[in-house]
Length: 366
Image (tube, rainbow, N blue to C red; front, side, top):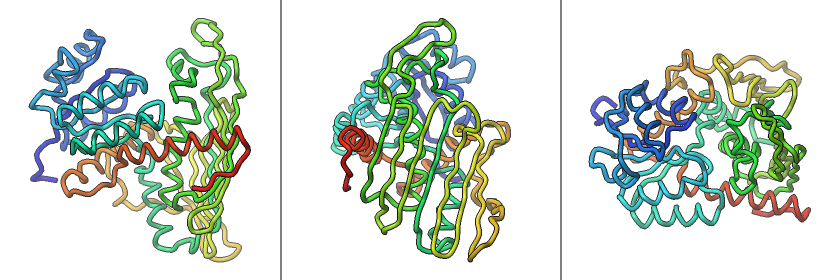
């Protein structure tokens, strides 16, 4: 990377995740330089620019995407605002990164992916969890035959948040038209984790549920009716004949976290974390065993999987740094490790098929 010029970024959006995560990790990566920022909330953009040393506050969205100093546009607004920023970047001929979900519907996301292809711009979608050192390590272990042929995979992701009482900061999770429920967000980020390791599904059945139809906003006591799903059960077959099951749930009172089990004909792997988001020092732990009736032993993650300085950062934030390292390598070498808008479309279509299966009871063949 020494000889590669800096990747100059223009940021759209100054929300919590933009500043708490993106700006923090980008300031730790010498490959990148944030040169401009834009928000409809001009004072917030000016405050962020002052605090983080961003040299230019754009007066308009068009001014940011057409700034000749901006190589790549990061769309970090809410899902309903993504389309506006993406279209502007594509029209200006700028490569564009967007947070998940790309848009609230698969059809709209497919339209944007096609538009980007026609314009010849590169796209990336913010699905960073698969780039965590633990998951890249497990991916390689499975590819190298640690478990042999995969017979089954099971993933359980649960979070304490998104229950019947919610902070105002996650009010966006309530309207079903936002496609930002706990199932859409955590499913969206963890599906690629599992499927990148064991392969994509070939068929499945699914059931979604809304177990908190009335939610109270903690700060105000306001009660809001919602139909957004807060639980998902899914099971099916993998492309190579193995079986899989997925359980995602919000509002779990105690004992939440992540557990992934991969069973093969030669060994077993387990990946766990006490937090689905991952706070400071809440890292994923990998254990495994080969052979029959062997105890699972800790499998330390080799140093070469540590791409990004994680000290003091929440696991969920540090994984974003891993994605940005992968992106800089993609741009330097012409590879495509970071998921594109087309990957986002595939996943959103999968979610729509999940809802179809839940509503009709039918099994979906992919």
